Length: 264
Image (cartoon, rainbow, N blue to C red; front, side, top):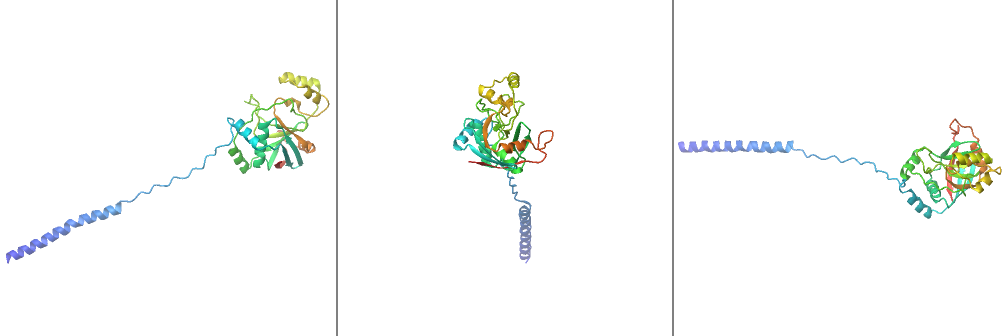
């Protein structure tokens, strides 16, 4: 009887120990499942693509030479607030011709303005500040064009030249897109001699004959800017452009637009 009682007590005690030994394991397992959280790394934010410009001063000759061979046009129609100007670009200034065609075909000049108009001198255009055109400038690149001077192409009335910076520009490299039309004034031989002396420039006989015969032009910037084209028609439009009221910087008080440039 005692044996049976003892056996029963022992059996109950073993079951109790067994149940107690299981509890911490289950608790620990549950705690582990509850506490361990899978960390998901954040997806890196996409960076805006870096724009690599097409043209820089290091590759400008190569690029424009190739572009000029692929785009052979020389005639353009320039529609302005005051009327139509037809022009011809010179083949023997290939870099300037190609650069002008590039910006024209991209539509950059459409909606640009004339920013400098001076009586008896020039009407300069090709400036813009619209978001789309500024983006176009970033994509094409900030470059200058090596000078392509020629005493055959000088600043007669109706000449088309490329603007440039004068500071830190000993090679007289041209701006990539800003250009001007010449209206001009008259010159005499003593004035031309003065320019030859002060600007270390020698006029050809053709230039001297032209300027001293009462023809209009801008002789004082020969050898300073590249002339890369000439007007076919529309000189009366240029004259109107140079006669509008301006501020002290020669900027028109009322915007004058280049509506579009058509290459043909």
